[in-house]
Image (cartoon, rainbow, N blue to C red; front, top):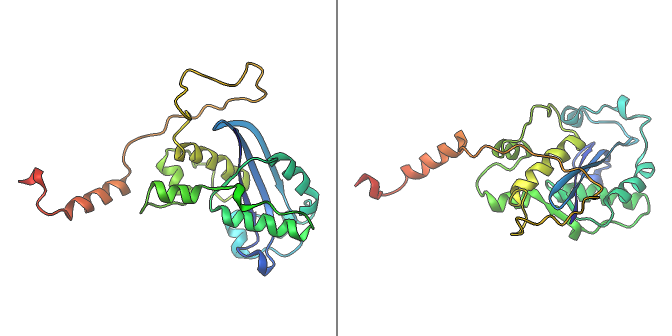
Length: 221
């Protein structure tokens, strides 16, 4: 099973307002394993970078001017993703920008049915918790030290590890002794450190608040 975990950086939040993609990062996974194959490019949006957006990802107009435009990178990106499902955090945002750019380039759009949204998965798995990428990395013990600003490839790499945790960890199914990949499998398995299972301070506080609201609990009788 091949899946692509991906992310974009943009000049703003609404493509209909003239905002554009400025960075694309994608990570290949096979059978919930990061293979080491990635796609990454910066994109010249051919418009000024708003200061609010630059503060988020650190990409300035000076840096982006002269980078390839979307039409020059799209074929490579589409070749990389193939027909695989596309995993993203708040997938509707990235898919809307991608399809807006594809329509501008006169190309067929990518159907939303291919999208897997880790934000929705997290909301169902942990109702009431925080669901930002930073919060999920903290929840699952994933190192965030390299994330001083948003970056499409780094965020895709972090999200791949979050996605593994959200979907049950490394082992999928009950074939514990079976590895369907042959010895000549053309990808490298990347080991992930075991995550901590201790409750966070936020979780302990929510538990204490819940217990305080119980009426006549048996253990206090």
